[in-house]
Length: 272
Image (cartoon, rainbow, N blue to C red):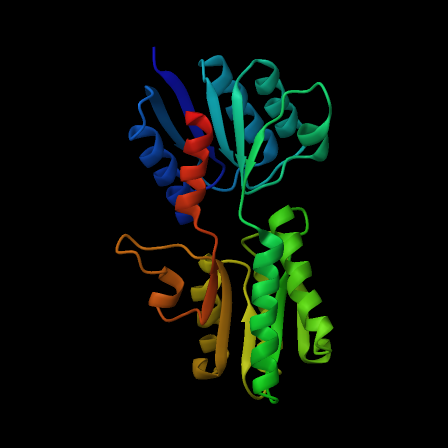
């Protein structure tokens, strides 16, 4: 009897597709027998809606759940705990589970697979510092957050920490962002900040998926994009292996968190 593995992503994205591809590649090449199901939900569903999906997959006999959430809440984490106590293996990807699930003695624990967001933030922070130091007329915009997500909170803090250590915060506009897809009002704020900068503009834009919209925003404000350097995050690759944000000419650089390899790691955990 093959074990039933269900991959659930709470929103459609190239990141989710890459993670799934890694899981699929690793499990289909193993000696174990697996029944693999991909369930990528439409839109960015809430933690409550995602909890319903988890409970449904449990009732449908899942042996393992690979979860890539966007929004979480207590109800979602309670559904994860319910799965664990039902002896279902749970692997949470990208979003760090609450500490009580990871470290409370006597409880079954989920696995957690993610990139090192602290180091990723430091890498980006150093790159921005280097460019600010080499171009004394440049200014930077750093989108900070989303604070409710460990990945956004940790790398945003590290980026600003590197800039502060270099005593360059006076040349930086930090803009808090509540969601991975910013509210239209945030774009107005970003546009106003870009329009106020007379020379080179360095902007960290949360993730690869926003690079095109940031470049389009600059054009709509009449800003020559040759003055713009966009720093992104994720390193999403096209089928030919190129990093899309850079290949399309929108991003100056991105941090490659290797989502395909993250998926392969999930597969490795399940194979053990």
